[in-house]
Image 1 (cartoon, helix red, strand yellow):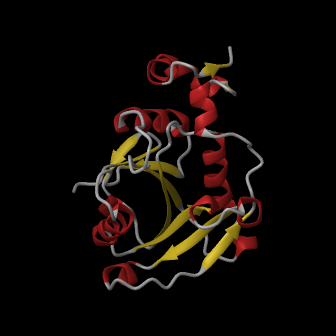
Image 2 (cartoon, rainbow, N blue to C red):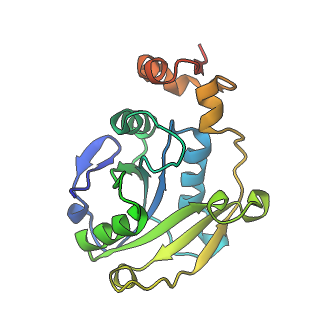
Length: 202
């Protein structure tokens, strides 16, 4: 599978990244992306001194369609929304990931590891994936070594991030329970077409 990556709206190849570089990747449906996701990205970029991991140079959102019981909007729509919200942020990007395979996450990181051996990957994981105690665990950064990925070894240091102060979810956006900020106005038609109940501040 060919992985497409956009940084600040410009498409590049992973092989073009200047190594060595530390890249954080957070998979999710992003249906749609919201300020809580963006704050998590900012926390990863800024919290390394207090959390203890090496500085992250680039944060990538990796939208997929693996969400049991849900049928998310088309992948290209979700990518377009992410691109709009990060278009002026040079350290944020979006990357395509496998969306149908059962073991997509592992296969995805194996693909990443083969693209550029000079990249160290951090996988950012929401606490809802590992524990019901979200307030205690907040968000985590999981160091992934390309060599360990290829050899099938899971040996991560785990770093905890501070919890988000943004209290919102994609479900609330889809249901129209919260008001989206003005940063969504340039893609209002796209939002309204795919999330009819969503509301945008004017």
